[in-house]
Amino acid sequence: MSQERLFSPLSTLGGLLGVALLGLLTVPLVALALSVSAEATLAGLRHPLFLPALSLSLQTSLASLSLTVALGTPLAWWIASSQSKATKVVALLVELPIVIPPAVLGVALLQTFGRQGLLGPFLENIGLAIPFTTQAVIIAQIVVSSPFFIQAATNSFRKVDPDTLIVARTLGSSSALAFFRVVLPISLPGLVTGASLAWARALGEFGATLLFAGNMPGQTQTMPLAIFSALESDVQLAVVFSLVLVATGAALLTCLRLLPFITKTTWRPLS
Amino acid sequence: MRRALLLRLTASSVIWFAATGCAQEQTGGSAKTSLVVYAASSLTDAFRSVKEAFEEANPEIEVRMTFAGSQVLRVQIEQGALADVFASANQHHMNALIEGGHIPSSQPFASNELVLVVPIANPAGIEGFEDLKKASLIVLGSDNAPVGIYTRQVLERAQLALGADFIATVQSHVVSLEHNVRLVRAKVEMGEADAAIVYRTEASSPRLKMVLIPKKMNAQVRYPIGALARSAHTSQARRFLDYVLSNEGQRILHSHDFLAAE
Image (tube, each protein chain N blue to C red):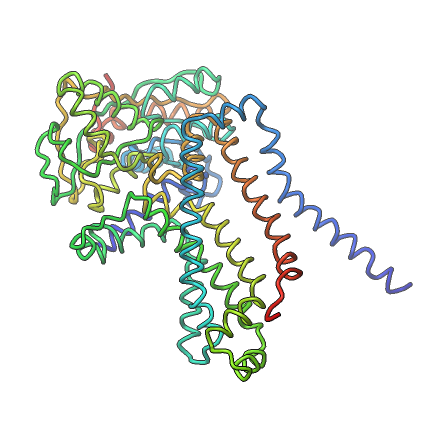
């Protein structure tokens, strides 16, 4: 009884604080949805900027996600399994882009891949020009999003019991086979979570893209850049574009909530 | 040198982020009246000088400047931003605010013209406006940024003089549409673009070479200024407007290469 009395004002306060934050997180999205009419939505979806931007966003974010997973998985495995001091440094370097503002990353990418940049003369020799191209959009997305994947992948690899691996090896699995048939199935939910976070971050990438890749419809103008461009002429249009990104994000999150469940029940490692 | 450029670019991105309203300049003030001035990106250097001189002449007023593309500032004012004064790089965005009842009236206070800028190394070998077709990487202002609107006027006029081929070639070489003139200029300053069209007032950089655009093709760039109807500091806003239009204000603008209002 006394314990209940002690905690109930606290839990009421906690509840109120929680509701306040929940409101802050959800009310803007509701307001966004309420601020456009059905006609404005239709007009927005038919706007010439819309389809090229959406398709560019989907293409580039899927390309950057594929590269992130392909390059990030071995790196994460190495960080998770190596005992050397170098891994700690590498783990820190990999997380650095998370705390650096995207605009700064955009300038840094220009200073690296630009004509006057560090690799500029080399790239010019082999006939490559990166800034202002779709490749620049993908590079910017990889830089801002892959740390999220690597972090999640490293964490889930660390949870794999080393004994399981040893057992697999003593039963005759090669180390590659053990990785694919033991480690990967166990860490799959974590990898999927990391990949989804990275994809969402790539889809929302704005600052680094604007500075490194520029703003050109059909070439480098992804949805966030199209939203900013639309905002300069027609707020309603910008809201419609934004709602499409919100819906995409919501769909992504829903799939994410369902996926680990599916993988847990249907995946049977080493059956 | 590279570090200075990096700082400069970071500064341009800060100017850009003024779109989200977080780049207001602040000086520690006590009981001073704060006057919030929204000004076009191209006024950045000139209005910083105006601010200094105005504050010296009016120690009881502290001017807080926000610089961004005029179209961005217009949207912010339409959405209720608490600005006192708006200085636009074209009449179009000013008129929209006048029609919307946000600004009672405006006065022209400066004019400008467009030029080509190329990196000092001039990789595309551009010596005259007609050489613009030789540039393979061209950066222009976006469709709603005043510099972009003026640029389209210049290209339309150039089409009559230089032919449709010229314009088609130029347009196929445009790689980016930037949201304000400072971002346009930054791409050339970094040497990433071969050429860009900016205001003449933006061309005085040691990293840039200026190429004039013939008068008959050039655009009439006019800057109007007005006080907001909802300003709580009407008399101070009036004083700022008067200062910009005064001999002293005009002298400062002229020292930054702006031309007198026509």
